[in-house]
Length: 241
Image 1 (cartoon, rainbow, N blue to C red):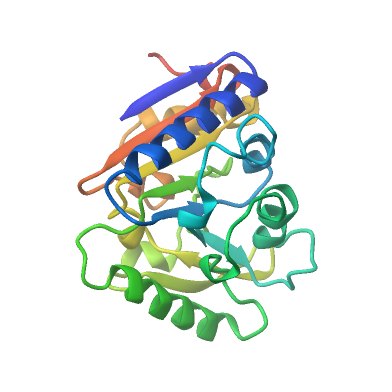
Image 2: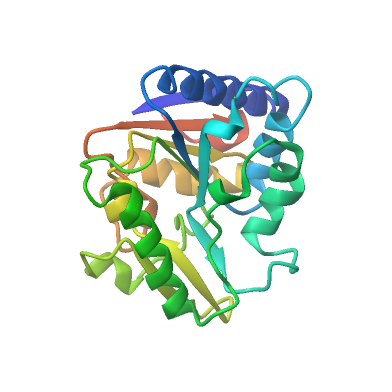
């Protein structure tokens, strides 16, 4: 595990942006395309704003990047809570990337069919490979969830699927999500966490006992890749290290 702690949000955003740009550049020296999974929520906005800024936007050849999503709320693209809309608003609309290389999770069909369709797409890319994505960006909820895998989720008991539809009782909403099974085949996985409200759960995830049913983020353990944590001082304040 690689842990990187930053003093401020600005330093966190810059640190992750520089690291991501360098990773894409070095990876593309040896292959045609880079496969990137974006996360939803508020925290990634900081990174997206950086990557779309004048300082960074030309450091990645976006014409050689394929974009996917880790999860999606079953809401119309026009809804502000839609993860893809957020990524378009803060990043994708500002970069030069072919539309065919942007792989949104559909929300105009029933979630169960959306999950099946997305899994078929993923199998066209990774069905015959040991690895999956080049980089998966993730966040952590204050309840210990990541992707749309929440505490007590039945996904934690099942195996074989790469994408699943789930109903979140608390939010009273369907969501479509990648499973830890396909994410853990990625070459690189990077969590981005900020804020004092995440410090307690972050300590449990990183330094506590393995309790995946209550802390699903602990299930993210790359099989043959690298795991990174990019966090600010507020989120890191309870870590012994």
